[in-house]
Length: 626
View 1: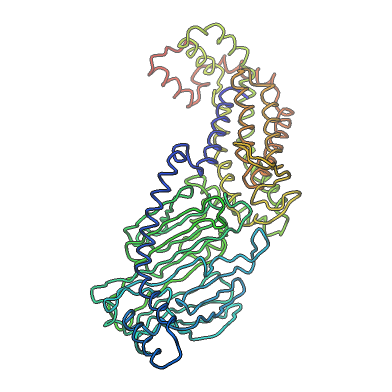
View 2: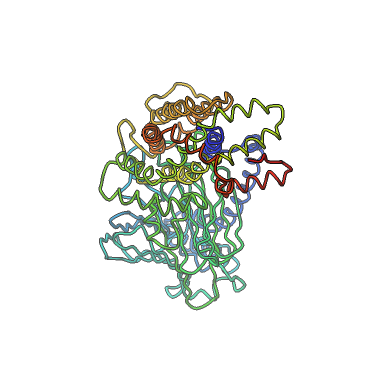
């Protein structure tokens, strides 16, 4: 392999390393962490104060009313008077007992509570945590969900008020569906806030509609909207909570520009006020997501925030969202929404509509296109055979290598040509080593006469870069690999530790991942094979041997499926090298190069060489005549 090709490989390696560490804080970010945490603490304090003010009335009413003795009609009257003073028309919501109603289908179990009329918990029936427990995304202890508004000069928050349910536990299958409502009355049965929940038999979709009935004289006349506040602390679901935090954030899609999706930082806490209408907001974890989608659009603004748990916490991140729902003081108004609560499975999200699949980070630009239009279709096709995922990755690797075979062969052929020219190149380098400009002129002249491109081996390899980066993004995001075992790896979606170390090594970790070790060894092997025949620059050899060692630390905490893929790709590449040698004759290449030297320059110059010569002339270089 020639020097330019090795530089290309080194650039690819640097890009891969950049992609692997781009999700980690920089040294500057780490140095400023304390200041950032102090700032976040202030934001949290302000948000908590605001939320506390909104909840104060309802919570105080509920507490004071229920703490009063209940042994006389006078006390009951006193309770009612106290609640009426604090909650006005919504006083009846201050007292009650919590009732849990279950809506269940084939894929999830939804528990609703009359306290706040909200979702208490959601269990995904087809998935388990790394400890073998059910995957529960909603949890009453980590969730706050309710409306905030002003009514009769009082601040009302529905999160702690008691609703009245219209139904009992229900289970649906197939194409069947069911609807259940929760009502919070405002002084009479004709005036109320209603939450309608609907569930069909086989989808990760929970319909949600808010109805305001007869409240035009209750809700403040100058209020053109109500706030919907949603707070979640995401539970740990996977083995590596650090990887979960690095992949958890909030995504959102703009309503006026369909398909445009953005997100908050994955690696640092962030808060944002979005001053345009949104279609949906998601609270995304590594392999699961909770999305609230408006049938039309959420009004502006929408405020969102992420706060990461710290070392020792058993939760991943806290996510806060405050939506603006329009309210026009009609006799009956509705705002229709629905939840997607389920796995980050590309096909399921795409089938759900509204571009939900765009919250899976498959890479930007061409890297994302490669994943969407090449890697995922091939992977899904192979998955239809119900093979073990280790076999699927093997076949996928072979398929991709076959697709890239023409480029790989072209790169090898170019390297072989440069190898044949090496004696002449070394002669020129020795002759003009003190004259850089003259050296450049002579080298360009040699390439022109021989009809060889100095970057002929590098460019085909750079064209393969989108595949390498696409795979780097694809495997860590593939829920299909989650908890799937192969050989010694118990879970291909995370690292395959064969030895847990009693200490932490900086830049490596506290465990030994065998697939990463094999990948590193195979990379060193292929580097050795290439360097024996093509590399003469000692500095370049040092860099190419160092790069796999760096990869050893970078990939030690990554998906075992990714390391396994790169290991297979390296083994196949080594086999291709020996196969190409059997079909490529160095003497024949040398003969053709000598023939090229005898042909007119116009017949040996490629367009690339012509551009190279033009650049050289523009810089004042004088090219030697043939």
